[in-house]
Length: 323
Image 1 (cartoon, rainbow, N blue to C red):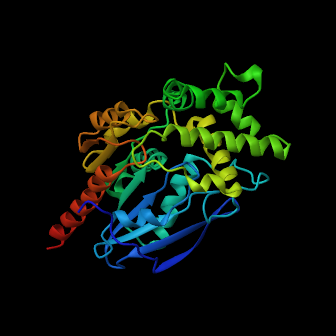
Image 2 (cartoon, rainbow, N blue to C red):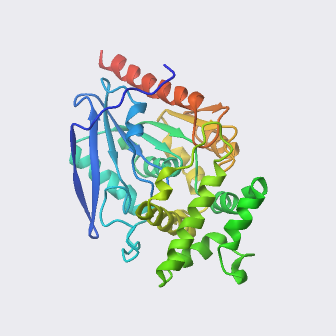
Image 3 (tube, helix red, strand yellow):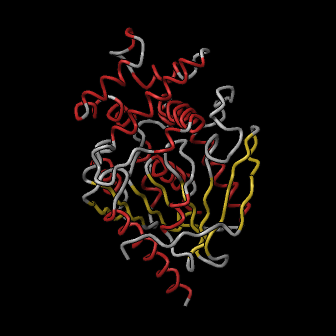
């Protein structure tokens, strides 16, 4: 099957109070008696989209999706510059996943993560391996300082004009320094016009990095001021703090994934997230299979085919185990 499964709607949804004044939107799709799977969206800060439901056979899976703190339908929404992000960290998100698992009465589940969601999936699985049955990762990331620097500095050599505009979006005195830190400061500036311009410039660069991909279309969500501000605020908040992860910790703790099968699907043409990142994860995790495809970061038909095949494979293994 090369296409995703048909569109479906949730049969259950709600708002989970996770403390800190935060309430997360969650939904469940597919079969109430199916194999549990949780979807971790990218960004950070992009929120879930209906298309993410379609990587799973709805007859075989109980598909759980949620919007991470400050994103999507969760509240308070980071599109409001007054919303404090101090309790929005990787460690808070890991705890949120556990609260959601307990709410839904899930013992173990497949963890699916794409882009930033791959970093979160690895961090969660290494913290709670006893709760993870399998892992499927798309466009693998680890959000290390070097990875962040590449995405906002190094890859600019492929997009010199666009990167020049991105760099010129910060004060002249900061253009030779850490651009993520500079935008983080701009997005917390007291002047609304400064914040709005910074959010536009940030999202323009995010869009430029994937503009060479065969299925490229400008992300229409960047035209929504509320989404644009929330996304830019959250991603700079996470990347400025290196996701609150010790450099290299996801590779060093990969031994905690022993016995957990994983399938990693990564595009050879992913300019923002070079293939070596996925390869390093696969080398450190003996139970992981790395599948390289001829696409970029946002996927494409070949990546979709491999991701659907991965969830189908784990659904079939669950059926065999039940016999």
